[in-house]
Structure formats: C-alpha cells, structure tokens
Image (cartoon, rainbow, N blue to C red; front, side, top):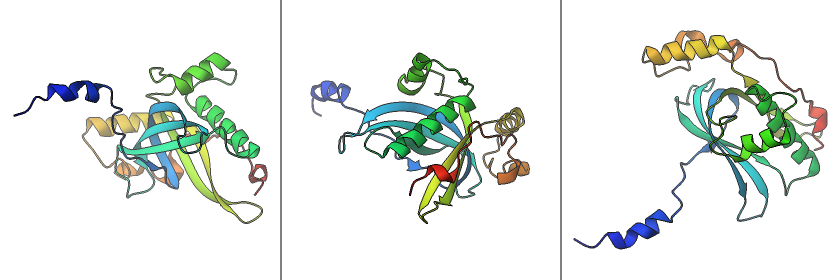
Length: 195
C-alpha cells in the first residue's frame, strides 16, 4: 500500500477527461443539449462555442439512443461569411428552444456561456444535417435547428416509459419525413455560401 493522499490535490486540480464525441452525421436527429462551452482553441486561438449533445433519436439507424455528439460554431479565425452563417445558426437554435426573436444580448450571452443556464442546456431540439453543393461545386453541410413538436415529445416519453430503447424505428414515428414540425425558424439559401 502507498499513501494515495499525495495525489488528491493533483486530481482535484486536474481537468476531467472529456467524453469522446463525434460530429453530428448527415441525417435528422433529435438531440438533448448537455453543455454549451465557450472556448479559445489552444492550437489556433480561434473563439468557438462547443455544444455537447446526446442523440436521443436519429434517422441514421446505426446511431443508438444517448450517443454522445458535438457541434461547434466558429466565431473567429474563419471568413466573415462563415462567421455570419454561424451567428444565423446560433440565433435559429435559440428560436428552436423558445429563446425568442427579440432576445436580449444578456440572454444570448447567458445561453451560450453559462453552463448552469437552462436556456440551452437540457433542451431537446431537432437537427437536420444535409450535405449540399455550393454554386461553385464544393460540398458543405447545412444545418437546420428546429423545435421538437409536442407529438414527438409525447411519443418519446411513451417509449421511454415502456422501456423501449430503439426509438429510431419504434412505431415509425422517427422516419425522416414524419418528425412533426418541420418549419425552419430562419431560412437560408445556398446563395449565402461564397465558395
């Protein structure tokens, strides 16, 4: 036996290991936002907002419920058009969780930087990730952040109560075309992509 207490202070001051999270793949996903983390990249110095997510259901049948995922918004170190696109995505996400079209700067700051705030953290949203081709022939992934409708929430709750784990295929509710509200809060066009 050895004196483990000598390591206690080091452990207390160590940053915990992060859960390995893949980026959201192409498809339609119902996700729970677990964290919103403002970060400055150690490699590039770029300012980012990182969303840690849990995929609750997906049109991708290979994804199991509660699969960890991530999404990030670059706010510096990218071309101005990319920053503007990310700001649009961030506003659309706030609208999807009921943040309101006229949210104050303080509310927006709290939503994206305060890990204890429930404006984003704990919210469930639908994310549609679609690969598109720009006018100049370059592929990119476009995202839609949508409110999860009451019907979908009720169905997910029923399945959880019934102990169903494969919410991707149960009773057909999670088919890509049949996921309730598909109204996009803010519309965008491929014309906004300059590449």
